[in-house]
Image (cartoon, rainbow, N blue to C red):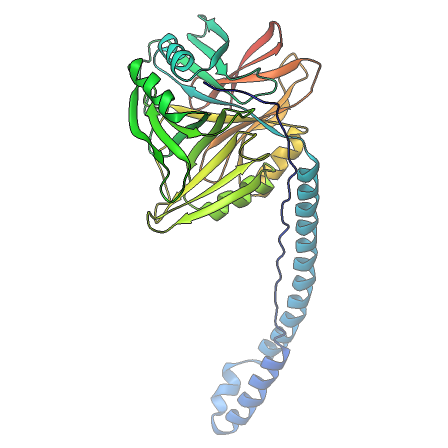
Length: 387
């Protein structure tokens, strides 16, 4: 159903911003007021007594203070601009990749069966942690070290979750949407939109739901190295989100499309062309500034060269760091975690911290992350980390 070809990469081109300030000298205004008051005092002598001369001396002194503050503000602005320029320059050089997306399911084996039989994914690995009362599984269309994959998390005794209104869908590229939909129907899957052209375009799409209610958009495309191609999230201010993901995460705005007939705008963000890489689809619905995030969808994990600089960029460009950057206990792998301006979570891990080492993250709750550092062949370390 899905054919895979070699992957490609792209460069990032963020745009710096600038700002300016304007201050006014109050000396001439004070002098004019003094002349006016002196002439008035001849007719109204009580005015001269009501406003002491020291008041005007204070105003002249305040103009000097303003000039001093102006120089101080200018120096502060220069330092801030220098920091922004340095971070943006570093972002252009940083090597980043979307690693995996984490979400919770009520029946792990049922979901694995659906993804492998209906969507053509492969079970990459599965593990059960009875002492922590959870299990997880990684599935995708290729190895974790070169493909974007899903991480399913099952918490013992929890058979359902609230997906909320903020999460949109995952996207999967297939060569024949019609055949894929027929297969899904035959396996008992739920089709929520029959195959057909996308509104306002020619691309053939369909929508389905997995057993937990997560929506998947099927997009008809030719062979691609990254069939698991989209994660769609809704945001309250699209321009703010674009600015954040460009500057803090080093993503590129691949395209932006406004659809006034249906009152929404989308922006595709990522680290390379849509036909060769997984991308983040941000959707803004006119007039909607907040969404319920539920407790089902967890986060995206991104690889970077430097988690410390990434955390600095997140703070500088409007995000919130929920786990300060640093090494995991007992190993050299470094991570950080943060929230974007809308509260969507992202985990960041340093790529290439040691040969054949990676970091895999499974969210068990809204604040706890279980992390496994492992060699490609065998798990070597596990820990539970509160973010």
